[in-house]
Structures are given as C-alpha cells and as structure tokens.
Length: 137
Image (tube, rainbow, N blue to C red; front, side, top):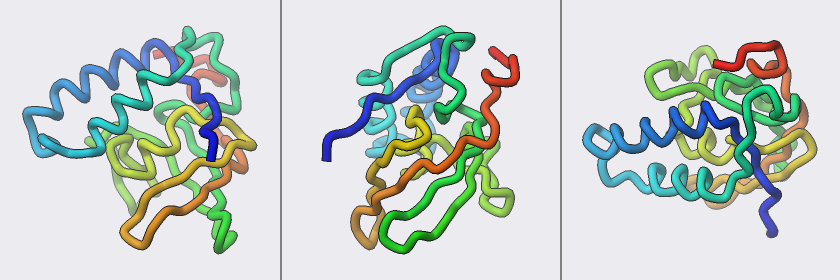
C-alpha cells in the first residue's frame, strides 16, 4: 500500500520532537513507537498552523475512523500521553493508533499494526481540529 502524504503543523512538530527526546529517558525508552513517530515526522509536509487544511488530523483533533474489514466506526481525540484517557476516547500520540492517525486527511486510508495483525483504517471525518477553529498553539 502506498502511504498518502501526511501533514503536520510546525508547532505540533516542535512539541512532538521535544516529546520524543524526553520520552527516550522515561517509560517509553526503547519503544518502537518513538521511532515510528519520528519517521512520521520526517516524512510529513510541515505547514504553519494557519495553513493546515481543516480535514487533517492534528494534535487535539477529534476524528471518525472506520475499520475497513469490520466497518466498525471509532471516534478518537489525538492527545499528548499525559492527556490520554481511553474512557473519554482520548488516544495518546505515542499509542500505535495515535501515531498511525497523525497527519492523515479525510478520505485517506492508513494501516495500523495490532497484536492480531494489520488493520486498514479509513478517515471518515474530522469533527474538530484546533487550527480550523483558530487555535494555533
């Protein structure tokens, strides 16, 4: 599968680079997810927050995802690890699906590696994106 281009804001990139650096010395030390997130940042198109398209999953965005095999719909908000709360559907950017969904747009399909094998996930909608509502932090 050819991976679609992903997009990230300059502020998200900077915060995530700092997160990766700090996480190497904490509980995520040696985690393959840090490497995967770093690789995603390296391949992303980086844009100023005010230029990011409104249909891109950025940090603190809420997106509707569809599993292509089961057709199960999932709604998640992508957050920093300290904000993660599965009961509130807040997924850490360092969780496998969090890393996988970062930067994709409505209409894109991405693969997510699970213990049961790869899942193909379709981005159905972005319900909220901070940048689209004028929050450029």
